[in-house]
Length: 210
Image 1 (spheres, helix red, strand yellow):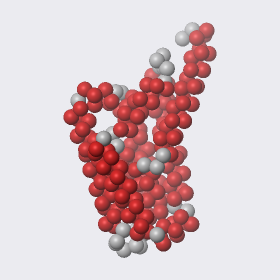
Image 2 (image 1 turned 60 degrees about the vertical axis):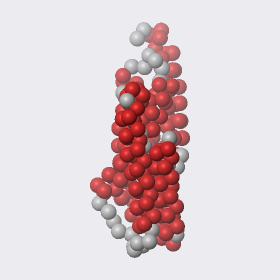
Image 3 (image 1 turned 90 degrees about the vertical axis):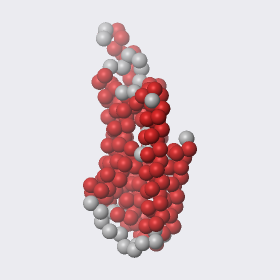
Image 4 (image 1 turned 90 degrees about the horizontal axis):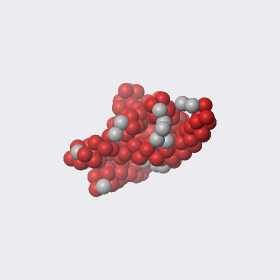
């Protein structure tokens, strides 16, 4: 790239990354299945499980971001049956999680530790259950990144959204597993689990319909 064009390019990339970071943070911070998965794990299973769950959601973010960047949205447009199959499978998984949480609300309230691998898999599966993340990532990359962006800039964009997700869900895991919140959860465990179950089922139902 010519020196005369370097400064405008750098300015365009700075603006692009700022826009990307802002909108991805807003999307991550908006309460959804990932947020409630990590928070539920933090309050009910402890910090280690919550952090493992958070890292699972981050891996899911990376998978969807890469898929979105490489045109999964275009693939879904070309093969709508494949898109519907993935969407329905994800919706049914979220509904199943919701029903499981509702039923578990009546079980023994004593918190039992779970393996980190299981918590990680739960976070990963919860994130992958929503293929709309790939469409959002593809749209955001297309709008935020300039046409002349080179592959290294695109890779940096993917790393940026993963870093934002990791920072946010790690914060959620730490705050959700603090003493005051865990004690409050212990006193209101049943209605909280039922409400979380309804939210998961609602997310799944919305995904199933749309």
